[in-house]
Length: 275
Length: 178
Figure 1 (cartoon, rainbow over the protein chains, first blue to last red):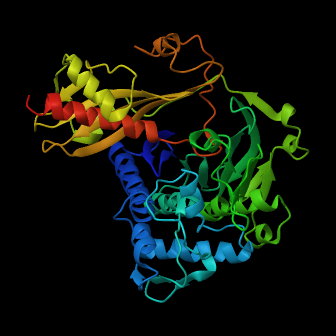
Figure 2: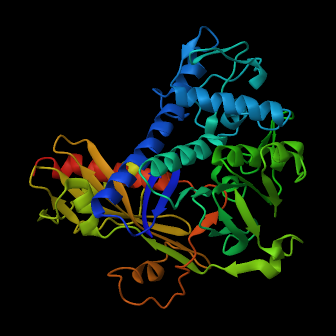
């Protein structure tokens, strides 16, 4: 296998493809796949002032904002996951993450009555507006989406087997199985062998890295939306699903409900594992 | 999706199913491969420089990177661009990367050359880093090189961004006028 790695989406994204193509084709494929991930980053970054996400966070309460079809697709998915998980997946928790300094202090957050994803109005022709003030952070879903888009690009270039791994959110393209490991939630120097995965994705959420990054050491980026509290259990939550965007989003709901038999997992033909 | 689970994890028997990871290493590109990908050629002029103390201090202030910069890995491209190899060191990982700079001073490309992760002792310890300088020499550390697909909570790439910041400061203060 040939592999390449770039720093994108705030993490390290690795793409691996079989070692049977010409150098030119390999470079071409990697170039286009990483370009696609970069596009997702540029559209959905919380940090970049020019991103679609920044535009809607700034203006969608005042007026309709037209977004890129990819951003629209992610927002539709986010809304669907919000509904299916009864609000356990909610990407409107950015005010809390800002308060805890897990996100940069871009927006004025005090004295505002924030809405939830229910107040996200998705109109036709990629127009988006908010019925109540909202501050969205797509960090819990955009990585998975970017992985899916990259896999699509690889497939379009005739690649039949590949692995795209964006900081632990990964997808295996094709029917050839790959051995999958996850990091032990308590001992990061221990790996747990999860089994073999083909033609599907796995994403894992946990607090074993996020906990120490915050200035407020007792907050993690896993937030219980209804209580606006962060989760501090030293567990990891993995979801396997066909699409990485689904796996990525559902790890947050699994962390909150702690229920591997939840209906939404069945709906998406997903498997949840808590370790 | 097809998933064949490891039977040992179904009962949450973590102790039985774990594999120790002493050091995990991945090599993505050689320096020459990265040159070729970024600039289409390996024909570059090697331009190692000596950085004055004030420049070193400014690089550190702008980026908060304290790990010393090895200024011997700098090349100038035929069209006036630059190709620089550097390392960033995190708590448990060391990343070697190459930065391509266009003749107009904008960033052309950033490629990760190697990624090394270590547990048990800090990566920033000089003795650990030493093992990988010059590389190709068989490492006494056991490297889990066959383990490819690791899922886990996202590892931040912020320190790489800081590394790039210091290289851009160096470009501005030292390379731009060469």
